[in-house]
Length: 207
Image 1 (cartoon, rainbow, N blue to C red):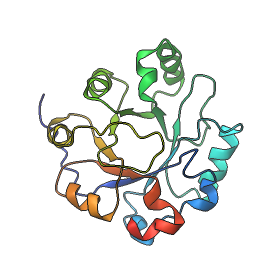
Image 2 (tube, helix red, strand yellow):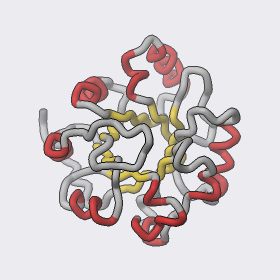
Image 3 (cartoon, rainbow, N blue to C red):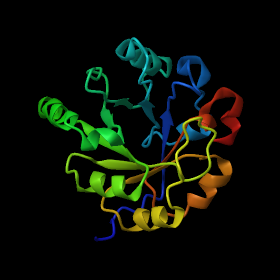
Image 4 (cartoon, rainbow, N blue to C red):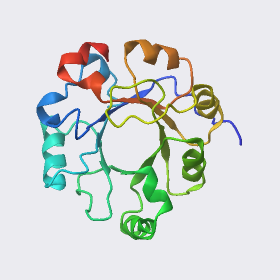
C-alpha cells in the first residue's frame, strides 16, 4: 500500500450525535470557538440517532441549530433516505457485509457526488472498508477508552498509527478524544478527529 500524499497538518473535527449520550443534540452539543476558527475546514456534523422516530426532520433541525454553517453527514439505514441537505453519507460498518449494500449502491447511483464514510472497529472491518471503492474515508473507533455504554474493545493503537501513515484513504480518529488524547495524535497524519462527549456543553472546554 502506498503512503498517502496527504499529510493532514490541519485536522478536521467531526461532531457526532449519540442516542444515549446526547439524546437532545440540538441543545446538548456546543461548538467551541476554537473549532470554528478555520473557515476552510468547518467541522462535519455526523447525525447518528438511529432510533429517532423522525430522523429526517430531526437531522435538518440539528443542522439549522448550527445555522447550516457546517456540512451534514447522515448515518444511512436501509429503511430511511437521507435529507436533501446532506453533503455526505455515513455507512455503519455492519452494513458493508450485508445484502443492504446493494440498496446503498442504488442510492449512490442517483447521487454520485455524495461522499461516503464508514466506521471500522476491527482491522478486518478496516480492510473491508478500504477495499470498497465507494468509501471515501474511514473512522477508526475506539482508539482510547470511552464512556460509551456500548463501548467496544479498543482498536489496536499502534496499528491505527501505521494505517494513518500508509492508508490511501483519509482516516478519522474516534473514541475517547479530548484535549489530552488529541495532542497524542497531533503529529500523526489523521485527517480528522471525532468526538461526542468533548462537544457536550458541560465538557466543551475539553475540545
